[in-house]
Image (cartoon, rainbow, N blue to C red; front, side, top):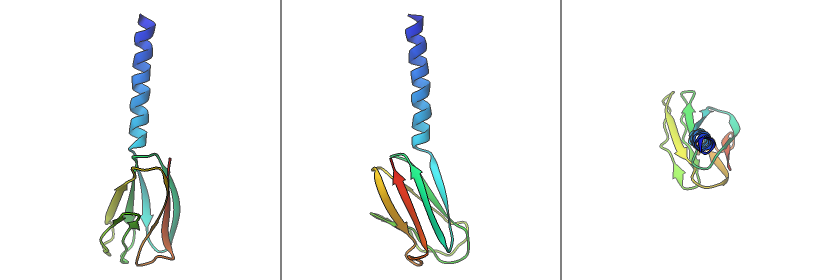
Length: 103
């Protein structure tokens, strides 16, 4: 009986650790130029941070942030589906992009 209880405690702790990792945030510094690939788990969040005073936005499948040039601005998006997603700044579409791989 003690072995079963110990096993259940260990399994619960492991499940909690994995759940926290799945919902962890990945940060992308958003400036000209930017080209970065990030890997996250389904349900994870990517946060973009404006690193300069140039105007930027974040545009991906089904979402678009406001365009602003205020340094330190952030935009976050939670990815609920698995897949590979191309994210761009619509102001700088050829030089600013992020590939988000969701497993």
